[in-house]
Image (cartoon, rainbow, N blue to C red; front, side):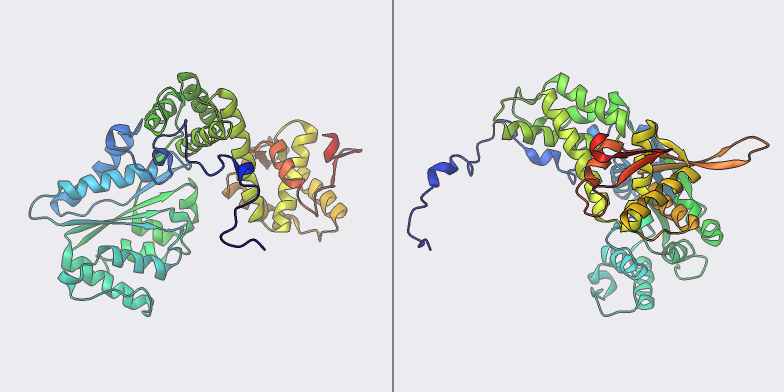
Length: 425
């Protein structure tokens, strides 16, 4: 065993492994997911900000703001616009009006009790209310009591931002917030709810009584186009040393992101990963090849993460769609086609075959994760309507992820009377 004072025999072999020289990045933190740019760098969202501000504007004079839900895919600026707009409204409140705001991450505070606790802890000031909200030890009803007390003690209006709202279990928290004044829980303070969700169909999951109570307005955030993504990426150019980032690389990142998802976060992550590849290759600048390599790695990592969190039956269901896409050279299939392929996969892998109804539910789960798109199509008067399942991901990328699966690695793919193995596709 080597002593603490002995030299490492192969130290020279390590070379510059632990050096901090970086010819690519200057301020890499500008590419972090949590980095919030200034208002001058909020691109292509003026109309959405205007509509959100208009809905919430009554708060600055102490009147009740509207409830607003922001919908759109990940990376379309929903959270950024909500944070910016609510902060500006708090600052714009008239001198005799007190407006508060809190941002609750429902992916973390995903139960009713956790959400209430995070809300009241974010809005309470013990010097004003005379109480401290503990992290644990109180029941749900007590947290609600403290919330109403804190709101009436401190504010004329409060803006409650519920980010990733679709991750919150149940709808009771929404119901309580939206009916607080009507139910005489609050005497002074008005509440405005800003819900943020990646799932445009989230409202369909709400009970009618909740929808009636909320009466929310909706703002849809469409994916960014190439021009917007190019501007967003260019706004992060200070993350790199001079001469590292060319216009061609910016345009390529924007084009890939716009064609695939219109997601600003993914576009920025793509640029960061390309920069890291350039650093690893000891290059002085980022090339388009670095961008393409980074894009392939990002897609593979995303699929691996999805599969890692999936059950065996979920994987088998997705594999059925992927197998069809690889053989038929199309990405859209009817439910009977998917179920037949699923039965073949179960037979080959020794997996129990679930009912058609259960497979339908599992396909809906993949739709919720935005791997599939499911639509109902009319087949004409004689044939009736049916569901079409369209694969949104590259089937070859998903196939490569399945090759690492012990159960599914050697599964053959059947189309008609022809069976094809993974290696032959």
